Image (cartoon, rainbow, N blue to C red; front, side, top):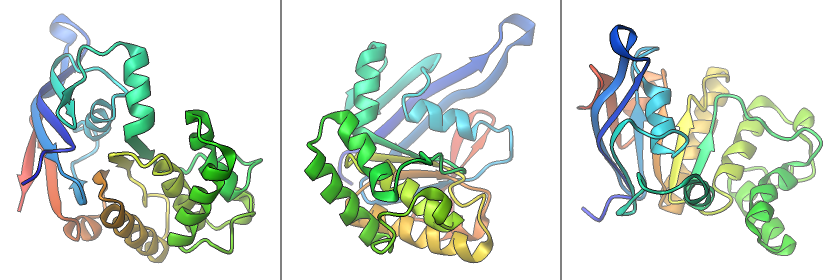
Length: 227
């Protein structure tokens, strides 16, 4: 298999000290590859969000290494981590967190403008992504004018607007009804394949998890591959 887009090597994370120390991750290992969607399924409190935050460079591990495209990140300062996160990692959450005063296209263009893309390039990319996700007729609609599923698809488009290498999704269909969740899931996984993303998707929906390329869980602070 080709070089991993993301590799966690003996990653550790704990909170507190002494007798009050709580070990969340005790030596987690995981590799993600381009074009592959990986479901992360585990009970609440097992450390799913912590694992996503560490893999997405939002938190620093207490031990071990997070490798991004073969590059170690442990020694990067905050500015370096922020720059890498902005260019290489996209995030989708259970709630869309769209900016209410901006249109769908403007929301998707925003991270590109922050990164320094010319406005015309950012707008063209936004329109392309939204059309791919079935929202070509909703470009000028603000979030309040969109359904829950449409808002989440805009959030997905925004997450990949800067053509990241990785996509981290935390319960992306958890706030949607089953029919809408199915549609959002289908568009998300098709985008992962088309864009050659490596995606780690935390979900409680076991039916959707079974349809991803791989399934992993957390047990006693380590990552276990499910078959």
